[in-house]
Length: 253
Image (cartoon, rainbow, N blue to C red; front, top):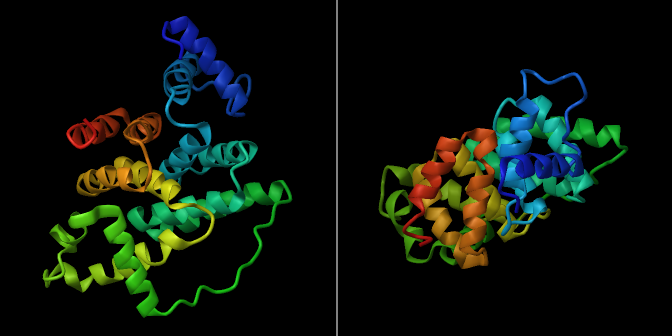
């Protein structure tokens, strides 16, 4: 990884070009901004080790999909396709992130992605309805929670005896854990990366602390968890990324 400013800037410009995210000539919004972004975001973060570019792209799509960032999202969806991220996987990022930021963001982001797919002649095939019974979803959801969180699966707002959170949490178990985590397009490791990036971007500290520790239970390394949080910095702000890293300092020490 490059370290000096000039080398970071140079390497960042290369990474940016490789991702197809260079800006059109003459469209720089303020003086030297492109040099700054190449240095900080692409040379300083996208070129870091310990997390492959495809994984970094999933984290980035999650963050961009949660906000009103249609223009930027178009560029990154196109870049994801060029990285051979499957179209279905791109759409699944938005539904996984929507679980945490609201499904209205899922639909908005998916419509942007479909515009890019259409421009490239890409069609995501229709699929048979997912008709697992409520009993299957509930059982699968509880098992998924246990696999992810261990003893923490039944603590806090997830405690079975909490009569207040119990008005909603069974739906989270059924549809969040029992349905979304088992949809095709992303594996559990990838969904965890999306979750970590989403919690960081949304400032959901309790969830980030819980899932950040649980990520190690499904095969993510602590370095990958750290990098997933760092990756959000240029897109949802460095303070939230730093807060997220601070929250997980003990769990990932």
